[in-house]
Length: 131
Image 1: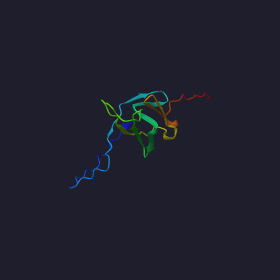
Image 2: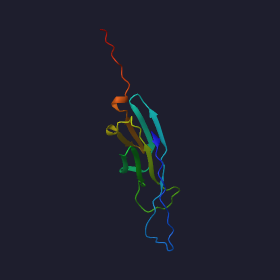
Image 3: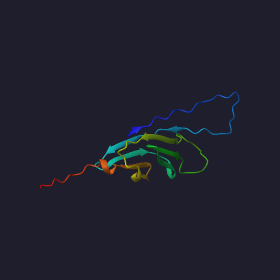
Image 4: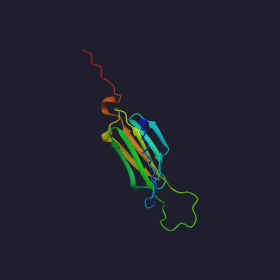
């Protein structure tokens, strides 16, 4: 599994600036990937992201993670030392991953994605017959 590089969108600098639209900022979440006997397990840190604000999808062999972080308290800010950011990251999947059996769980700000090996690449014992 390789990280998919996404081309940066072109930036046009208009002569007049419209300030009615808020520009969203994305950062790549830190990710750990472990290989198990059944496939790969990916852990991504997504602090402040609720299940409703998380998108995990596979399209054209590309796994996309997009999360919108929100503070737990929804009142006016009196004092803030940090601001939550949105998350975006893509990975190109190998053909050995069974895309129909990918599962994902979100618990305590950590996304766990299970990428199981396709049946034809799963190691198996071959029975030897005598005859």
